[in-house]
Image (cartoon, rainbow, N blue to C red; front, side, top):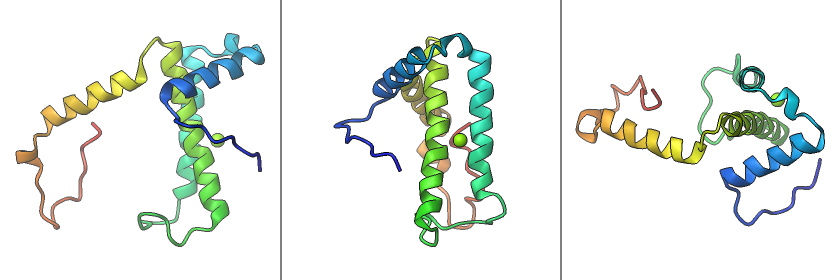
Length: 129
Ligand SMILES: [Mg+2]
């Protein structure tokens, strides 16, 4: 396993810079079109889905998972995040600001007074529409 230096504060901007440097050093900018990055992102979402495929419902915190399974999960989650950050950068979208705006829009769309649920009626979660 590769040792990872401890970053004081991992931010979307730091990840954006790291991805930009990574692509530039390898002369991969020519391949990082919005369409290509989107397709790569979707592929990584598929790899992430495979980890959960056929496991049925799993408890929060994944207490029964082996360390290597959690390591693999972290890698695939990271692949999704990194392609999302790169896609946003290439499209000129400030992902952090866009995400905060979306949280505000969701709060308006789903006010607390309409979203309180009982233990029997929260089968659907539409908070990420
Ligand atoms: Mg992957």
